[in-house]
Length: 69
Image (cartoon, rainbow, N blue to C red; front, side, top):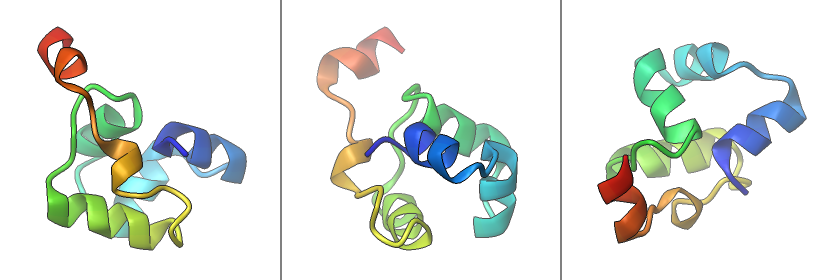
């Protein structure tokens, strides 16, 4: 599941989620809207914070998406 979809389903805002996990709002917003791929440690942190609903693999961008961003 994508991070944005998960947050929407739980009613948690991107800002609140970022604050809850101690990360910059702008960073989490870019990840949620698939404008940026997280580092592996951050992907694991997000996966844990979502109780595994959003997996590290869900946040991977393909090469064409990274070039377009």
